[in-house]
Every structure is written in structure tokens, then in C-alpha cells.
Length: 153
Image 1 (cartoon, rainbow, N blue to C red):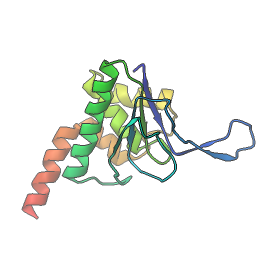
Image 2: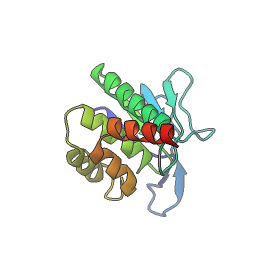
Image 3: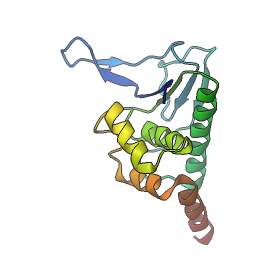
Image 4: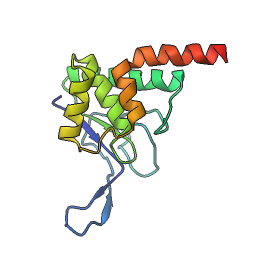
């Protein structure tokens, strides 16, 4: 989707030495969606910023609802012509889950969304098989199942 970016908090430097550089966000984006907040990584105070920390593992109903809200916020911002960054630590799994759900909301199948992310971001993106299963099942369905499980426990 034009205007939609996926990334992490660190990246291999462009100088070819393999040195890790910090991916500090300033005002390059209109909306930043953060799934793991680390101090000092931005964005600037005047940039819209939503933080929803989630693990890179099993999610409960509340965490899944937050992921779906972030994906909706991304879709709404993109519709308005804004630039959106979705980020987690490495920019592969948690951010991939949000971006994939946004792509699915935009009409892509789960398989198309996953393929797009792996093609455009990295073949290593969405290597968390649980998240891939979530996407194939559909986040709203997974959320309902998680909430039913919580009630019966």
C-alpha cells in the first residue's frame, strides 16, 4: 500500500560494515504505530503516535483488539493520504501482523498479504508461525476464540 511502511528500532548500517544503527523517527511519518516502545526512538511530539505493546508470542483478546485497532488506524490514515510507519523491535513479526491485517482489511487475502510483506520487507518477515495462523484464521475470529477461552477458564 503506498504510504505504508514497516520497520524496527534498529537496522544494519548502510556503510557495509554490519554496524547496527538506531532507527530514530522524527517527523518523516504522519502516523507512527509502535508495538514495542523504547525511549529515545521518537517520533517528534507533533507526530500522531499510538503505542500498543504486545509480545512476539500468543496474544490475548485485549491484545488482539489493539492490533485490530492499530490496523484500522493505519487504513484510515492511508485513506487520508498520510504516511504511516508500523514498527516493533526488528520490524518482522509484530509490525507484520498489523500491516498484514491492514492489507486484509483493504481486500487482500491472508496469503497475498503475507507474500507482499515477505517480498517488500524481508523473506524473514512474519516468521512467527502463530501470527501466520492468526492471519489465516482471521484476527476477529481468533479474538472471539481467545475471549471465549478466557471466560471458560
